[in-house]
Image (cartoon, rainbow, N blue to C red; front, side, top):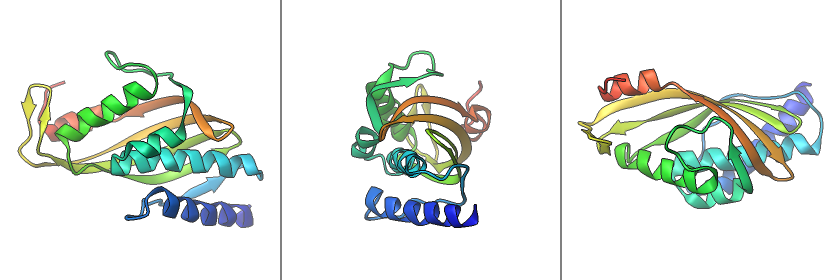
Length: 172
């Protein structure tokens, strides 16, 4: 198991170099439950998607998500698929222009990948009717992805909006 986790960790490092050549995507802990090429492919797709959230560069989302990508926990008002993801990211980056994402934990089991993400930056832009004053933002999210082939086809996610809105000083 340790040998396989090390192999995946090395693979993750190579992916990070490909995903974000000008800056490193922080990955704190990687765990692998299966010993297959599919595990590595699935981890690579998820790290490409994490690079999108870290950098805001849409090419990473386009590389990671399939044309049939479905958000299984679609927030009210968000469009389904890649278009919805890109609009959500763009809107949130207007509120938090220096947004970064850190992969705190990545667990791979075949075609399923669970990732714990930490988002941080400063609320210095506009979020709905609220104007930021530079408040520090630091909140977590957990995502479960299903990877088919080399692309993410499904996503289930849960964000800590309570902490986010508290930091933004927005009433829920």
